[in-house]
Length: 134
Image (cartoon, rainbow, N blue to C red):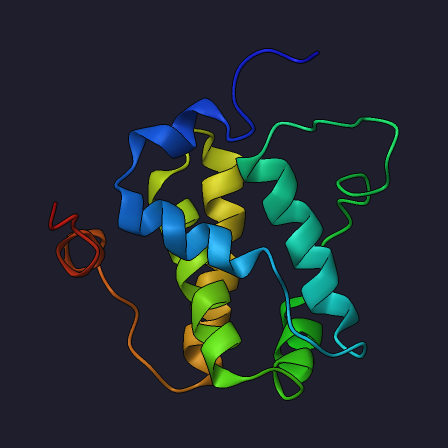
């Protein structure tokens, strides 16, 4: 039996609302088309979870798609899922302790923000919006 937690240490150090947003993005869209989204989901799993079964394919393929391919896939996703994914990437971009991971997440976040013609939030704005009320 594996000891410890499924979530990686850095995840339990951020507020619950931010954890919830990231975990909501793991489900993925209910469509079979979005190959780029599935690649991002595998990457997210590896970034935020410890692998409970290293023999499974669940977290193995970490090949990341081009941002343009991800944008094309977003046309097949609901806006609800899109915002969960975009905000999960934003949180990881601002909060992950490994600079290469946070830079990758920020790049995808900024690409998705640009795709829907929004302005990116600052870290402070995100923290305020997602502060725990408990």
